[in-house]
Image 1 (cartoon, one colour):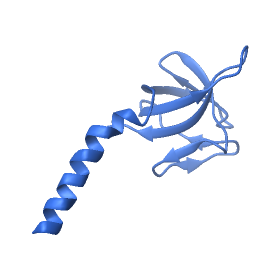
Image 2 (cartoon, one colour; image 1 turned 90 degrees about the vertical axis):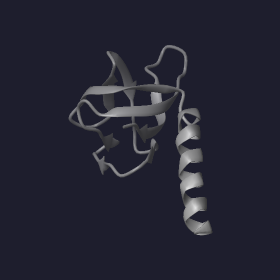
Image 3 (spheres, helix red, strand yellow; image 1 turned 30 degrees about the vertical axis):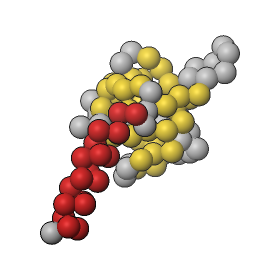
Length: 93
């Protein structure tokens, strides 16, 4: 019983803290055929094989492949004058 309670408590804590793991959230609208660019809420982002994906996803030639209308949470890195690159991504329900 203690183990079950501990598991439930851990899941609740993770659910509460999950929003703190990523800075941005949005819905994928489209992705290029080589999986290097993704459009999320009308904003373009680069992704690559160095993008850390928290969850199961298919890998494309240059990065993870997302489904259209998939909600994700993500963090970005950006250099001046460049399209932001997604560094980490989580799947949001």
